[in-house]
Amino acid sequence: MALLRDFIRTARMARSTSRPTGLPADDEVLLDAPDDRLGPALVAAGRGEYGPAAELLATTRASAEWENRDRYTRRLSAFARSRPEWLADWRAAAPHDPDALLVGAQLAVDRCWVSPARAELLGDIGPLITAAAEAEPRDPVPWRIALDHARGTHAGHAGFERLWGEAVRRSPHHYGCHVAALQYLSAACCAQRGDTPRTARHSHRECFDFAERAAQDALPGSLVQALPVRAAFACLTDSCGATVPRARLDTAADLGIALSAGYAAADPWPAGVRNLLAYVLVRLERWPDALDQLRLIGPYATSFPWDRISDDPLGRFLEVRDGVRIAVASRLPLGGPVPACLTAVPGQPRSFTDAPPHPRSEHDGRARSRDH
Image (tube, rainbow, N blue to C red; front, side, top):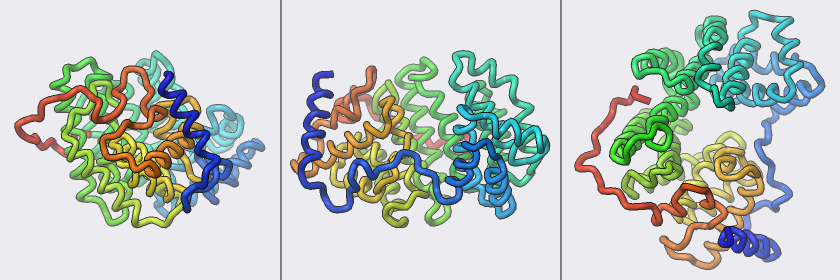
């Protein structure tokens, strides 16, 4: 903790120095800022009005904007956790509305997820997800929710395969469904299942196999191309330590950098991917690349992944940003110490290079892409 305090103090002192071109001031950075379509719906929900949210989701459904529909559903559900009245009124007024059913199913999963009795509680809400799926047969988002539900209830492989098939049949390149599948694979790691390091290595390889195949098959510019970065994040944050070769992590980061380059700077659409990529690049101690992504992020900080290492994700994002700036200005070589504000997490290695060594496997062992 002393190292963490020293790093944060240094980073804060550095804020008085000149800031590199392209980094907005701290007070200009927003956390999880809604886009121009979602913002008015959230404002109206704050007044107890569900109409704008209903109109927004109906538009995404009519035009098959499945990625936007997924994002908006998650954000509306998150808002309803603390302000549920508008959603209750909506569901009472339109009990068979596919959009109200969708937000209601997401909210039910979100509420169960934070409980120590998660698996038992999730087992009771399956009919809500089924109702949302049946209300709009084209929609992949209920199946993404079903994939999350299956992970939370520790569903078997065969059952998950069935859900995955339904999801990709509706939208073969849906990012949210692919992330849900990757998280299902990650749940097999030793940190969550008590497995041995050997099993953890196999599980991480399986995650990477799935992520890399999905990225190769993805459409140009699709966020699915960032799936290997999600696999790298899972490996780097696993309490078992790094269990895949460094080169594979770097390749995943390079693919994320190429994807990010296809979007405009300060674009809110890829902000989540860019925040995740910045985290991975810092853990890999690739300071100039991390600073490039922080410039591209602009004012759009996202809770994930910073909320995995701090109860103050915005504050941690700003501290890490200053740490990266210091590292680049100091011309730290690759392999220098990772900023303590990023890795001061009990039970985790301080950096990739500090992680306990693991022997490489004799072969890559390609896994079936449907396994996640």
